Length: 178
Image (cartoon, rainbow, N blue to C red):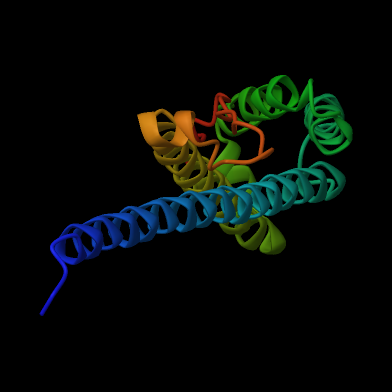
């Protein structure tokens, strides 16, 4: 003979187990999203450093006139040494400097007339394209994480713990016209 309270107890236990599983799944998902943001940020930082390095290499290559080399080297150096607060501005300045340099009349013809200029230009084009993709991927990861953190359950039960809310990385990353 089954006691009358046993089915009710089993039902409540099943509800508690399912609720616990759901909360655990949500916490794991939020943790994975935060890891994705960190990984995307590392990839973005690597792409930005690579673009600045190629810009510095182009500035030091003696393929450009001295004034253009100085402008490009200054912008690339500022982008590499900027602190966290000024990074977005410095990277935007580097993007604008690259567009100004590449947009000069006969820029491509001048570089292609010299042997090493073509390889450097291809490397710069690839680096600029990677920055655009890395920033887009990072901002998508931030948007997904922020969206998950806005859910009621995550706010009521602090599933995010002490992890800071990630910020978007907004820069002018329009690549030059190669």
